[in-house]
Image (tube, rainbow, N blue to C red; front, side, top):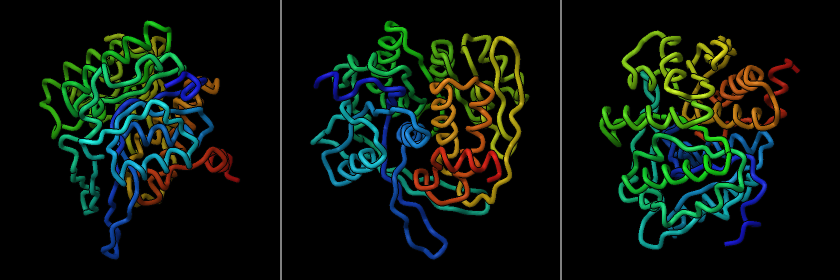
Length: 310
């Protein structure tokens, strides 16, 4: 593998991509794609960021389809490896009165077999920012070690590190998640929690107290999504509220990932953090107006049009 395969990137996303089956009102299943960091990569790419994936996928038709998605989105795959002995992960989304419910088929997935030795960690320096998540860490102990090694490589080369805890208690115990997230937050430049996850992880209910908790740990910049209430943005200078946008929501799958990708893309494009957060809230709002994690993620022109009302 040569550096030219994954070079001059804004954002390199490390974690588990998945194939999605989303239940529709007429009983059919809509075939699509997901996996939190892959969603972030697509979101960032659609906002104009130069983006790549760092992961393992199965040598199966689902892995082929993911490669096709990334090629269509202009996402570099020089750091994507195929595993002939493990499948690509799948998940299913159903919708009910209490929102969306996920079922996963990811045990022993190719991504869960990531190790520091199997990933192209020498390529981390090709990107201005490394993004990963709690799911990237929780799918296996070896994947967690791979994430630690990638962060070490990014920090050693002066790259930014972005992290979303994306808590999934079906993957690991709360105490393990809490300790790992705290350690990861202390080592990242951009921390991107959702409020519900952060409340469980910290035991705090007040959003501003949660912001202070993670800023005190050492996170440089915290952007916490609040669902239909918008977001909070904080750094050493203080915390500001980012108001919500109106939406006709039908499916919130991947909305937080859309926010992450849009926020990082605008930061890396040179926006200040507050402008990037307003933009990301608008992008996430648009994304909940369609079904699936990937299909409704807007492109930059759509976001700017919504912001200006044109």
